[in-house]
Image (cartoon, rainbow, N blue to C red; front, side):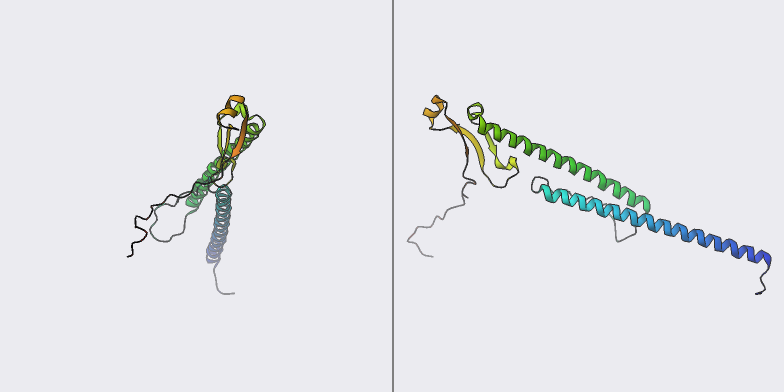
Length: 179
């Protein structure tokens, strides 16, 4: 109808087939990029949640960004490497969080034992930080009445009053002196 020969029609059909294949390839790459970006976002959320839950005992990770000049579109390989590095960091921070939980669990067990048998844990000190609590307090087993309690075997578990008072520089000015 349009005056196209059979060989020209074959050429058109072949180019159309390539365009369809190229469109499928682009759609597949777009889907792969989207999937990788979603995975990276999920891993970043998980990493930030681990750090937020473990704060201040688990500190924020340093930057893992590579030195890149200017904005650019990452290739699929670079996106995969970025995702893999982030997944490794998440695993590392999970291990840190698990170690911290285990440390706090052992500290709680020790405190319970100290309370049950204080004479067995003479002069043992357990900071409240080790229990996952904030502050500067320290649980300590000490004799009830000083030397007399120590000789008599009267031991008790006490919680210190908290943080020491700040000791800043004092004024060297004489009270009656005016500036």
